[in-house]
Image (cartoon, rainbow, N blue to C red; front, side, top):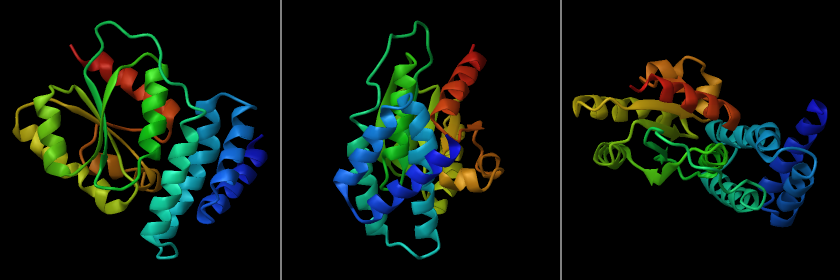
Length: 214
């Protein structure tokens, strides 16, 4: 199963680089028929996405390739991800955002996983540091999930954290994305409360952080 997932991840990466929408859809459809959507996305989509990010960081891929590939992938996964679940009572206020990057797939997967697990959360989309901090404060958010693809965006989480602290609001921050998977200590350096490597971990993290809120 692991070897098969690795092969599919490589096929998916190749299809994305070729901007082959039909091939991307076919790979996801085949994978979705053989297992739970969230699980196969973690095994196949996330590794392919990580390699694209590494390609950009090393200068082998252009930002336009990353952007177009991620848009194609985002459109394809919408057909296989669960759309919602039962609402939980007394849950904390949750929000999720992409910080600076032009990449929504990781956020899309996590959002769907949480909603399928009966968590309600607000999707802020893409924001810069100032507007994300301001929106979080104005909405009274308890737990903020931040997704990044590039290292500069990951480092900017510290700025969001500082602005939230200065406001006097206690907001817990959970981060995810390639930079945090590559550097296991980075989430601590930017002041986050937790880091998740995939959608399944995001559910566990949100549940744990929610338990800390009195």
